[in-house]
Length: 300
Image (cartoon, rainbow, N blue to C red; front, side):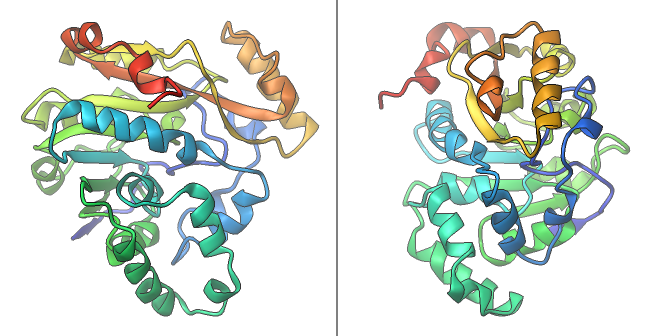
Protein backbone atom coordinates (compact mmCIF):
# COMPACT_ATOMS: atom_id res chain seq x y z
CA UNK A 1 0.00 0.00 0.00
CA UNK A 2 1.53 3.32 -0.99
CA UNK A 3 0.44 6.80 -0.06
CA UNK A 4 2.08 8.93 -2.70
CA UNK A 5 2.75 12.47 -1.55
CA UNK A 6 5.98 13.28 -3.35
CA UNK A 7 7.04 16.30 -1.37
CA UNK A 8 10.68 15.71 -0.51
CA UNK A 9 11.49 13.50 2.46
CA UNK A 10 15.08 13.07 1.34
CA UNK A 11 16.94 10.30 -0.40
CA UNK A 12 17.81 7.04 1.16
CA UNK A 13 21.48 6.28 0.88
CA UNK A 14 22.34 9.58 -0.64
CA UNK A 15 25.71 9.03 -2.21
CA UNK A 16 26.93 11.91 -0.14
CA UNK A 17 24.48 12.46 2.69
CA UNK A 18 25.66 14.51 5.58
CA UNK A 19 24.47 14.45 9.10
CA UNK A 20 23.36 17.98 9.69
CA UNK A 21 22.57 21.22 8.01
CA UNK A 22 26.24 22.04 8.64
CA UNK A 23 27.18 19.51 5.99
CA UNK A 24 27.50 21.59 2.81
CA UNK A 25 26.17 19.31 0.10
CA UNK A 26 27.18 21.74 -2.65
CA UNK A 27 30.74 20.59 -1.98
CA UNK A 28 29.83 16.97 -2.72
CA UNK A 29 29.02 15.22 -5.98
CA UNK A 30 25.29 14.98 -6.61
CA UNK A 31 23.83 11.60 -7.47
CA UNK A 32 20.23 12.78 -7.40
CA UNK A 33 19.39 11.18 -10.73
CA UNK A 34 19.68 7.64 -9.33
CA UNK A 35 17.11 7.91 -6.55
CA UNK A 36 13.78 8.01 -8.37
CA UNK A 37 14.20 5.73 -11.37
CA UNK A 38 11.57 3.08 -12.11
CA UNK A 39 13.97 0.44 -10.76
CA UNK A 40 17.35 0.35 -8.97
CA UNK A 41 19.63 -0.75 -11.82
CA UNK A 42 21.09 2.71 -12.43
CA UNK A 43 21.58 3.17 -8.68
CA UNK A 44 23.75 0.08 -8.44
CA UNK A 45 25.63 0.72 -11.67
CA UNK A 46 26.59 4.27 -10.75
CA UNK A 47 27.21 3.95 -7.03
CA UNK A 48 29.10 0.72 -7.54
CA UNK A 49 31.76 2.71 -9.36
CA UNK A 50 32.40 4.59 -6.13
CA UNK A 51 32.25 1.55 -3.83
CA UNK A 52 29.14 2.70 -1.99
CA UNK A 53 28.85 0.35 1.00
CA UNK A 54 26.88 1.81 3.93
CA UNK A 55 24.02 -0.75 3.70
CA UNK A 56 26.61 -3.54 3.98
CA UNK A 57 27.82 -2.17 7.32
CA UNK A 58 24.30 -1.46 8.51
CA UNK A 59 23.05 -4.98 7.75
CA UNK A 60 24.71 -6.68 10.74
CA UNK A 61 24.05 -3.74 13.08
CA UNK A 62 20.37 -3.44 12.18
CA UNK A 63 19.82 -7.17 12.58
CA UNK A 64 21.37 -7.06 16.04
CA UNK A 65 19.43 -3.99 17.09
CA UNK A 66 16.14 -5.45 15.84
CA UNK A 67 16.80 -8.69 17.73
CA UNK A 68 17.47 -6.69 20.89
CA UNK A 69 14.10 -4.98 20.64
CA UNK A 70 12.05 -8.19 20.86
CA UNK A 71 12.37 -11.95 20.55
CA UNK A 72 9.89 -11.97 17.66
CA UNK A 73 10.09 -9.96 14.40
CA UNK A 74 9.37 -6.27 14.92
CA UNK A 75 8.05 -3.38 12.86
CA UNK A 76 10.87 -1.29 11.39
CA UNK A 77 10.48 2.17 9.86
CA UNK A 78 13.24 2.90 7.34
CA UNK A 79 13.48 6.64 6.75
CA UNK A 80 14.82 7.66 3.33
CA UNK A 81 14.25 4.07 2.23
CA UNK A 82 14.58 4.52 -1.55
CA UNK A 83 14.36 1.14 -3.34
CA UNK A 84 14.16 -0.83 -0.08
CA UNK A 85 17.83 -1.82 0.06
CA UNK A 86 17.98 -1.88 3.86
CA UNK A 87 14.85 -4.04 3.90
CA UNK A 88 16.41 -6.37 1.35
CA UNK A 89 19.49 -6.86 3.50
CA UNK A 90 17.62 -7.04 6.80
CA UNK A 91 15.10 -9.66 5.72
CA UNK A 92 16.91 -11.81 3.16
CA UNK A 93 19.93 -14.09 3.03
CA UNK A 94 21.70 -11.69 0.70
CA UNK A 95 24.65 -9.34 0.89
CA UNK A 96 25.14 -5.93 -0.69
CA UNK A 97 27.66 -7.60 -3.01
CA UNK A 98 24.89 -9.98 -4.11
CA UNK A 99 22.66 -7.02 -4.94
CA UNK A 100 25.39 -5.30 -6.95
CA UNK A 101 25.94 -8.51 -8.93
CA UNK A 102 22.21 -9.02 -9.43
CA UNK A 103 21.38 -5.54 -10.71
CA UNK A 104 24.47 -5.08 -12.88
CA UNK A 105 24.20 -8.52 -14.49
CA UNK A 106 23.56 -9.01 -18.23
CA UNK A 107 20.31 -10.76 -17.30
CA UNK A 108 19.05 -7.70 -15.44
CA UNK A 109 20.15 -5.35 -18.23
CA UNK A 110 18.06 -7.26 -20.77
CA UNK A 111 14.77 -6.86 -18.89
CA UNK A 112 12.11 -4.19 -18.94
CA UNK A 113 11.18 -2.72 -15.58
CA UNK A 114 8.03 -4.84 -15.49
CA UNK A 115 10.06 -7.97 -16.20
CA UNK A 116 12.65 -7.01 -13.59
CA UNK A 117 9.92 -6.62 -10.98
CA UNK A 118 8.68 -10.13 -11.70
CA UNK A 119 12.23 -11.49 -11.56
CA UNK A 120 12.94 -9.62 -8.34
CA UNK A 121 9.75 -10.76 -6.67
CA UNK A 122 10.84 -14.37 -7.15
CA UNK A 123 14.45 -13.55 -6.24
CA UNK A 124 13.57 -12.02 -2.90
CA UNK A 125 10.96 -14.63 -2.10
CA UNK A 126 13.58 -17.37 -2.62
CA UNK A 127 15.96 -15.66 -0.19
CA UNK A 128 13.45 -14.55 2.45
CA UNK A 129 14.52 -15.20 6.02
CA UNK A 130 12.04 -16.97 8.31
CA UNK A 131 12.51 -14.20 10.90
CA UNK A 132 11.76 -11.35 8.48
CA UNK A 133 10.60 -8.09 10.04
CA UNK A 134 7.74 -5.89 8.92
CA UNK A 135 9.25 -2.85 7.18
CA UNK A 136 7.59 0.49 6.49
CA UNK A 137 9.37 2.78 4.06
CA UNK A 138 9.37 6.59 4.00
CA UNK A 139 10.99 8.52 1.12
CA UNK A 140 10.17 11.26 -1.38
CA UNK A 141 10.94 9.03 -4.36
CA UNK A 142 7.58 7.74 -5.56
CA UNK A 143 9.07 5.46 -8.22
CA UNK A 144 11.48 3.91 -5.75
CA UNK A 145 8.74 3.34 -3.18
CA UNK A 146 6.51 1.77 -5.84
CA UNK A 147 9.30 -0.58 -6.89
CA UNK A 148 10.05 -1.65 -3.31
CA UNK A 149 6.37 -2.37 -2.71
CA UNK A 150 5.97 -4.22 -6.01
CA UNK A 151 8.81 -6.66 -5.30
CA UNK A 152 7.76 -7.26 -1.70
CA UNK A 153 10.57 -5.46 0.13
CA UNK A 154 8.25 -3.02 1.91
CA UNK A 155 5.01 -3.87 3.67
CA UNK A 156 3.89 -0.25 3.41
CA UNK A 157 5.42 2.80 1.77
CA UNK A 158 4.83 6.53 2.15
CA UNK A 159 6.13 9.51 0.19
CA UNK A 160 5.51 12.32 2.63
CA UNK A 161 7.78 15.23 3.52
CA UNK A 162 7.57 15.64 7.27
CA UNK A 163 9.98 18.55 7.14
CA UNK A 164 7.32 20.54 5.25
CA UNK A 165 4.00 19.16 6.50
CA UNK A 166 2.60 17.01 9.31
CA UNK A 167 2.27 13.28 8.64
CA UNK A 168 -1.02 12.00 7.30
CA UNK A 169 -3.28 9.95 9.55
CA UNK A 170 -2.45 6.91 7.40
CA UNK A 171 1.27 7.21 8.14
CA UNK A 172 0.68 7.82 11.83
CA UNK A 173 -1.53 4.73 12.01
CA UNK A 174 1.02 2.59 10.16
CA UNK A 175 3.91 3.49 12.49
CA UNK A 176 2.06 2.79 15.74
CA UNK A 177 3.68 -0.65 16.28
CA UNK A 178 7.16 0.56 15.26
CA UNK A 179 10.00 -0.45 17.59
CA UNK A 180 12.98 0.51 15.44
CA UNK A 181 13.69 3.40 13.07
CA UNK A 182 16.65 3.05 10.70
CA UNK A 183 18.51 5.64 8.61
CA UNK A 184 21.52 4.99 6.38
CA UNK A 185 21.46 8.16 4.31
CA UNK A 186 19.72 11.48 4.08
CA UNK A 187 20.11 12.54 7.71
CA UNK A 188 21.41 15.88 6.48
CA UNK A 189 17.98 16.54 4.95
CA UNK A 190 16.23 15.88 8.25
CA UNK A 191 15.51 17.66 11.50
CA UNK A 192 13.59 16.63 14.62
CA UNK A 193 10.42 17.60 12.73
CA UNK A 194 10.57 14.32 10.84
CA UNK A 195 11.07 12.12 13.89
CA UNK A 196 8.95 13.73 16.59
CA UNK A 197 5.43 13.06 15.29
CA UNK A 198 6.39 9.47 14.51
CA UNK A 199 7.72 8.96 18.03
CA UNK A 200 4.57 10.47 19.47
CA UNK A 201 2.42 8.07 17.42
CA UNK A 202 4.32 4.92 18.39
CA UNK A 203 2.72 2.73 21.05
CA UNK A 204 6.10 2.00 22.68
CA UNK A 205 9.39 3.85 22.94
CA UNK A 206 11.26 3.55 19.69
CA UNK A 207 14.97 3.02 19.12
CA UNK A 208 16.59 4.99 16.29
CA UNK A 209 19.72 3.64 14.58
CA UNK A 210 21.33 6.07 12.15
CA UNK A 211 24.54 5.85 10.13
CA UNK A 212 25.69 9.45 9.83
CA UNK A 213 28.54 11.08 7.94
CA UNK A 214 31.40 12.49 9.99
CA UNK A 215 31.34 15.80 8.10
CA UNK A 216 28.85 17.47 10.43
CA UNK A 217 26.94 17.16 13.69
CA UNK A 218 23.94 14.99 14.56
CA UNK A 219 23.38 16.99 17.72
CA UNK A 220 20.31 18.91 16.52
CA UNK A 221 18.47 15.65 15.89
CA UNK A 222 19.70 14.04 19.12
CA UNK A 223 18.51 17.07 21.09
CA UNK A 224 15.11 16.80 19.44
CA UNK A 225 14.79 13.15 20.48
CA UNK A 226 15.63 13.78 24.14
CA UNK A 227 12.12 15.00 25.11
CA UNK A 228 10.84 11.57 24.05
CA UNK A 229 13.09 9.84 26.56
CA UNK A 230 15.80 8.87 24.09
CA UNK A 231 19.50 9.18 24.84
CA UNK A 232 21.71 9.27 21.75
CA UNK A 233 25.09 7.54 21.84
CA UNK A 234 27.70 7.70 19.09
CA UNK A 235 29.89 4.65 18.65
CA UNK A 236 33.48 5.62 19.38
CA UNK A 237 34.63 2.90 16.99
CA UNK A 238 34.53 1.73 14.38
CA UNK A 239 33.68 4.22 11.71
CA UNK A 240 32.36 2.80 8.45
CA UNK A 241 33.38 3.56 4.89
CA UNK A 242 30.54 5.13 2.93
CA UNK A 243 31.97 5.62 -0.57
CA UNK A 244 35.12 6.76 -2.33
CA UNK A 245 35.59 10.43 -3.09
CA UNK A 246 34.89 11.42 -6.67
CA UNK A 247 37.55 14.12 -6.73
CA UNK A 248 40.41 15.69 -4.80
CA UNK A 249 38.12 18.69 -4.19
CA UNK A 250 35.55 16.48 -2.49
CA UNK A 251 38.22 14.89 -0.32
CA UNK A 252 39.60 18.28 0.73
CA UNK A 253 36.09 19.37 1.68
CA UNK A 254 35.52 16.22 3.76
CA UNK A 255 38.82 16.49 5.61
CA UNK A 256 38.16 20.15 6.42
CA UNK A 257 34.59 19.44 7.55
CA UNK A 258 35.61 16.51 9.74
CA UNK A 259 38.27 18.61 11.45
CA UNK A 260 35.72 21.39 11.96
CA UNK A 261 33.45 18.85 13.63
CA UNK A 262 36.23 18.05 16.10
CA UNK A 263 37.13 14.68 14.60
CA UNK A 264 40.41 13.30 13.26
CA UNK A 265 40.37 12.41 9.54
CA UNK A 266 43.68 10.54 9.66
CA UNK A 267 43.32 6.97 8.41
CA UNK A 268 39.73 7.58 7.40
CA UNK A 269 38.90 10.49 5.11
CA UNK A 270 42.62 10.89 4.35
CA UNK A 271 42.52 7.38 2.91
CA UNK A 272 40.01 8.31 0.22
CA UNK A 273 36.56 7.54 1.62
CA UNK A 274 33.70 9.33 3.31
CA UNK A 275 33.10 7.64 6.68
CA UNK A 276 29.95 7.29 8.74
CA UNK A 277 29.44 6.61 12.44
CA UNK A 278 26.60 4.82 14.16
CA UNK A 279 24.30 6.91 16.35
CA UNK A 280 21.85 4.91 18.45
CA UNK A 281 19.04 6.60 20.38
CA UNK A 282 17.39 4.60 23.19
CA UNK A 283 15.83 4.99 26.64
CA UNK A 284 18.36 5.24 29.47
CA UNK A 285 17.44 1.84 30.89
CA UNK A 286 18.34 0.21 27.58
CA UNK A 287 21.67 1.99 27.27
CA UNK A 288 22.59 0.59 30.70
CA UNK A 289 21.41 -2.94 29.93
CA UNK A 290 23.01 -3.22 26.47
CA UNK A 291 26.22 -1.29 25.82
CA UNK A 292 26.60 0.19 22.36
CA UNK A 293 29.45 -2.23 21.65
CA UNK A 294 26.86 -5.03 21.71
CA UNK A 295 25.84 -3.91 18.23
CA UNK A 296 29.18 -2.81 16.77
CA UNK A 297 31.48 -5.63 17.83
CA UNK A 298 32.88 -7.80 15.03
CA UNK A 299 32.10 -10.91 17.08
CA UNK A 300 28.67 -12.49 16.68
